Length: 446
Image (cartoon, rainbow, N blue to C red; front, side):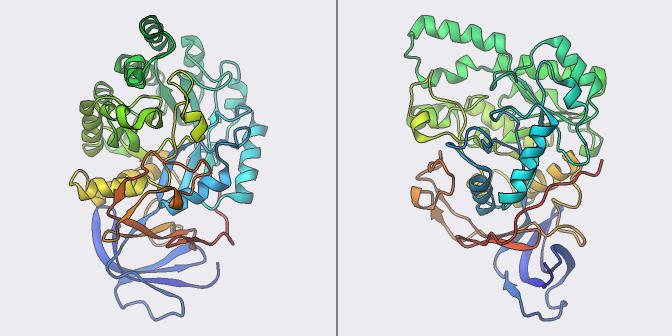
């Protein structure tokens, strides 16, 4: 991008402060930040007055289903939905088909994203029971991390053998991100549920089968291993009050070797809503009690939990409409995560500054992302202009996901995403996309 853009008079939310500023974008980066009126006039100016400008959300956990599961989603469609929702960068998971367990398969994903992704991108290398040699070849400056499923997943990606885990945790110098649920506990709970209900297990049993004990047993084991081996551990989608006790808030994020993530659905929904939402809110880990939901939010606010994400994991309506045992876990979230957070702000649950901290700043710090996640001169211009006074409702006509549905259908949000810039390119503008420029591969300052 050679031409400049100036965003005039927006209320810039950055590093804990809200100030009315002008932002100049040139060659894809933020070239100047100044008080209103200090930057000379330009042919290409955006009036940001009355709106808020924030750094684009960086989502550290998505499942875009490509390759092998493209009837559910594709990198192209879901990246577009992400940008519409104010997410400018994503990190995608390896449980595709085939699983991303070799360097060659990992690189194929990057090549595909370069062709079609409107958002910036990175992909996790997958760990299995027998691919440590491939894991150790991963380049920490070009790949976000290594993903370990310490709970059920696709193919050979369940890694719950303690010897295998010890090898990974002791030898891998990169960030290891874990899905933590104890499989033995889940299977015992499932057997008990089948004995009581047969094949007609009600959806309300999901948080009983995949219970808090299963989460804590696995998360605490991961913390123990990481502590023993000084591993850089990042535990994904914390869903229980008890797990929040595993994490520290007495040291800065940059000094932490063990970090954690909260997801939008665990902050919004609770198990009482299974009755109305059914399998549409079936996720792993499960949505649990209102007490768990509130405890996860409290831990996010006091910095025991470090970052916000979506765990965007779409399935078709037909797949989700099956019975409990046959309906897959996961749902689409990237388009509606930031609007949901802004709604929580309107409800007095979280501040705009804290949303930016947890969805942008802290993700950049946690993963050592190069020049993203902040509104600073010299940083890439990944920016989102939001209107806190423009309500809208989620319905099928405005859903961008390939699967065509959302767990938020019917929800009225009081705030809207007006514009999204990716690397200085205005990729989304009030419902319209400009795909003339694709996103970039994330780089890591490690």
